[in-house]
Image 1 (cartoon, rainbow, N blue to C red):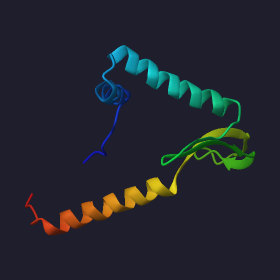
Image 2 (image 1 turned 180 degrees about the vertical axis):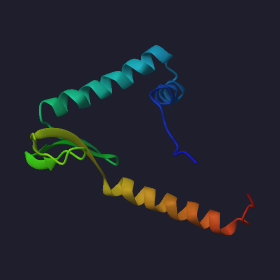
Image 3 (image 1 turned 90 degrees about the vertical axis):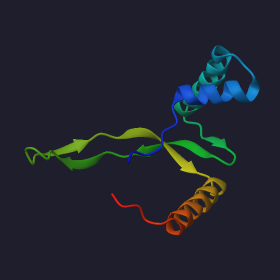
Image 4 (image 1 turned 60 degrees about the horizontal axis):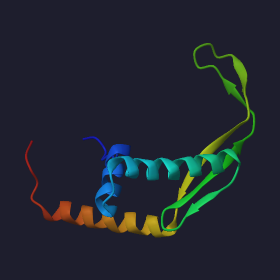
Length: 113
């Protein structure tokens, strides 16, 4: 079973329905939000969105690595990467949802395959 996926097109559709906007306007809103977050991360800023979490840039120093094919030792260069940390509020909501899902699965009779 594949994991549920919410696509960019589906987000645009949800914005359109919620605010009674055209698909073009909804797409522009989403693109503006994403561009703002990306630009902030490029500048090294942290982006905090209440009840969602924070995006920040994390520095990974250079380290020694090994080529799995040849076994040769190599240096993996330093890099910066974007990371996301879920807020406490989001983690609590996800935990509550998982508890409800687990409870509903245990209450339903097992289906034979």
